[in-house]
Length: 445
Image 1 (cartoon, rainbow, N blue to C red):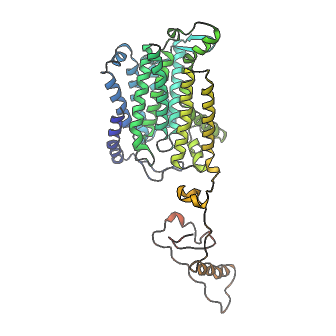
Image 2 (tube, rainbow, N blue to C red; image 1 turned 90 degrees about the vertical axis):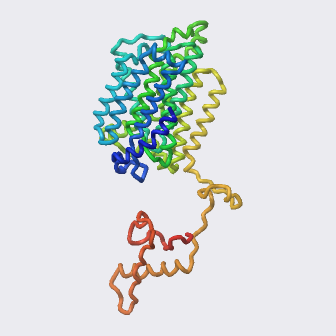
Image 3 (cartoon, helix red, strand yellow; image 1 turned 90 degrees about the horizontal axis):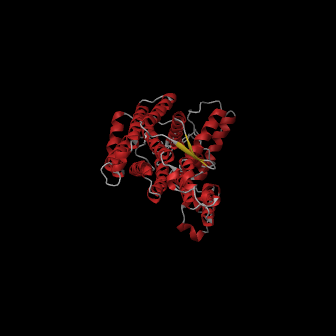
């Protein structure tokens, strides 16, 4: 899957440029150069290749013979991918996209990929009516798709976070499949493995600086695949088949943790995107805007405003996603370990330090400046040289002439020097420099 996605991304990029799928840079965008979209075409090719190869493997071909879930996933993914391609090229209204997401989820429900029962703590498995299962399935699909779509704001952010979520989900599903011998968990394991391959194959092209974006065709696709895996293992695996309800009540509570984890795991693996989604809806509604109106208030935008670099902001989001997702999986394995709780606390403290790092800029001693990045070195005071002194004095007659009429016998103010060749236009903000002294390009400050 990863190889197919990686090899397809290059031709897809050329096709996107030729097709004109390079929208203008918007106010909320972080990148400063037009970048082609439609990366979801390559990711959909990786999905098809992964399912095709799995259908011919000895250990996985039985999944296609005994279950209709892979076909249901492919049908829903095809619809959502086509909707995303249209949006990347021509743009689609937000309500139309929402309707398309619900239709794609409904197609999967009609083919059997739905939640049949729900394990409730303290009660046990609760059977759902067809209408209840359909509504719950559609809601989970729509929430997951939009959460992933909302977090797709930095180079490599969405693909990396979903890859981390898929890896954590794969570990959980694989344990249910082989640890408890439940074949019903095989489709979810397959979906997680295919999703990891799709993201890993696309990530080298999408890492900062990105050469291509996945667009809505990719973000909605990987969100749907992630939701499909959660629905499969939550609503299709019978908790009674694990034979965990035995012994004392305390032992039963600890033993049934793997049963209840699917209720939380779909949310933990997208906890950061889901929190971003909720905050965005509250923020926009509070301002009187539409919940679908775009802005620069997402979590990754705030990390950049704090002072983090692009790469560091992405790595911090990776860290928190991995901590929450793998922490939930580890809790399902051993929920009573003291070392587990201690490790989570320590890692959370490390994450908080990384978040606040730009607020504190330590300065190292002079002898250690050669071993640290330039931002940690002491800055020398600007030296007043012979070149800068006349330039400063030349501003005084200009300022005096601006404040009143020119005095007789006073020398005429010197004309301002033209801008040197090669000066970036972004630095030429006004007619006069906002610094107290002028310097030539290339001279030390």
